[in-house]
Length: 322
Ligand code: PEP
Ligand code: MG
Image 1 (tube, rainbow, N blue to C red):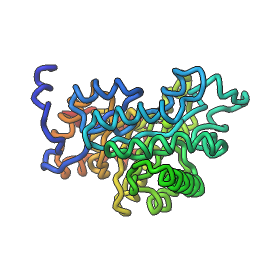
Image 2: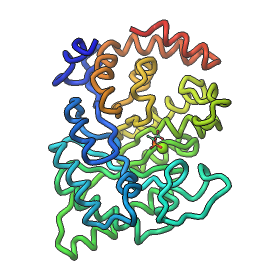
Image 3: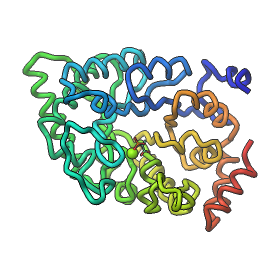
């Protein structure tokens, strides 16, 4: 099987009809970019920047952050590199930030909420990202967005950072793209409004499934609810992709579900434009995408969207798998 997959190395990622989609990688640190490139990624769809913060004893400086982002930008040689700003809290703890203990950390002061609450600290990261954008196709992605104000505030901070960089005479991409993760039910429900103010979407199914189903994936007693095949989750995905496509922005997926061979025909039918997966999943995902024409994917998806339970959905996808 490994040998058969090698046939997909160096190939474009196309559906059975020859329509191109982008197949990019999820990475957690700059060295992962080499591994992803060895697995033939077409860019980076999610660089989880929190690892820079978690591996440190204090906040990484602008120069330290810049060095890490620039390294990935250069390694990808002009291919897109989506870097997500600090996604702290929930399951991701950073001791030196001294965050208060919360009753319910998954619904608490985390991710973009924490960053916007500490704008001077956030500006250090945004400035480092802007500087890296002079060395490749770097895009900024905001985690855990639930409302339009958050995107507007991030955009306004980026504008401030640009003015400061101009004053310092430092180069950056003046039209750097700013996009959002769609990983909360709120973001899904306002996807039309968000699409009007974002340059791209990337669907974070890991969190979206949990928040939609009110089920913690780490809790085995509710694991049967934590399923991408749940009709509520599938309708949410369909809606997000449709609204993004209507607004002509790129819609990608960087949650684990993007690499689920059972789900791929459904994602093709919905019109997903970018699949961001772990390095070892790249060639297999390219193969599965190539196995489905739009018409076949549409026919299967129409049947799947008429089903009422996750169990039925999964069974139908399994029986249709190539
Ligand atoms: C997600 O929620 O799907 C995602 C990609 O982000 P993370 O897994 O880092 O929370
Ligand atoms: Mg997430």
